[in-house]
Structures are given as C-alpha cells and as structure tokens.
Image (cartoon, rainbow, N blue to C red):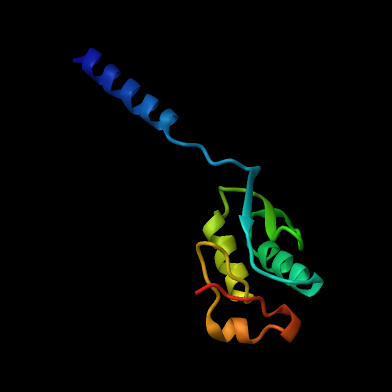
Length: 113
C-alpha cells in the first residue's frame, strides 16, 4: 500500500514539474499600424501601461513593436488590447472606430477592412 502512495506522489510531482513555466523575460514582436512619432509615443506608452511589460519599442518604418514582458504578469493579448484602446490596430486586435477617430489627423493610418 505504501508503494502505491509513493508512486502516486511521484506522478503528481512530475506532472507539476512538467507544466509550462512562464518566462519572466519573454520577447515578442508584433505589427502595429501607425504613421509618425506621435504614434510611436502613443503606442509605446500604451504598451508600457500594461503591468508586466518591461520594454516596448515601436519602429516607424517597419511598424514593428518589440516587447519584453513578464509572462507571469501579462500576455501578448493584454498588450494588443491596450494598443488597440489607444487607437492602433494589430493583427489580432482592431481598435474601435471611436478610438481610431480620436487619433490626430496625421496619425490616422489606412485601415485594412
């Protein structure tokens, strides 16, 4: 009987160890629509407002947002939602028309429908 209990405890322990661990320094790159330096500041500020984001850098020419985040505190979807709330579309999360319309005229990029 003791052997069965020991085997069950070992299996539970191994299962717990096998679970995916969250990365505290996960690197991501996502595309974010925008045009100018005002967009750059807005996108980076929105990304950094998410708890767990350690670094956010948006490149104007490529439209890429490079991120360093703690997956124990947030995930990429949280960042995409925050950026969309600031008026900028990502591949997975689109800004609402109201949020997009609040952007300055030069920041209103061509939206793909």
